[in-house]
Image 1 (tube, rainbow, N blue to C red):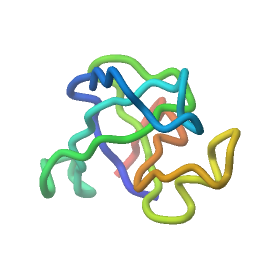
Image 2: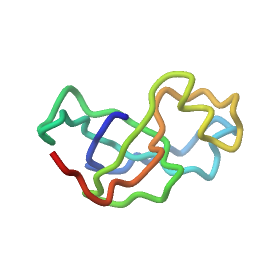
Image 3: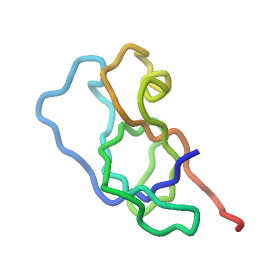
Image 4: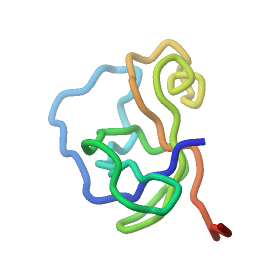
Length: 87
C-alpha cells in the first residue's frame, strides 16, 4: 500500500473515452512518517476522495484494474481513503 495526500485536481478538456467521467486528482506520495516522498502524481479517483484526504493508491497495471474499464490507459489510481494511521 502506498500512501499519499490529495493536493489538487486536474482539469482535462479531452480525455480518453475509457476514463470519461472519472475525476483526476493530484496526490503527493508520503513515506511511513507521512512526510513528502517524491514528486506529485496525477491519479484517477475511484473512491471520491477530497482535498487534503489521506489516501492509498496503486501504480502501473493494477491501477487500470480498479477502474470500470480495465483496459484504460492509466498509470495511477486512488483506491482507498485512510481513516486512521497507527505507527
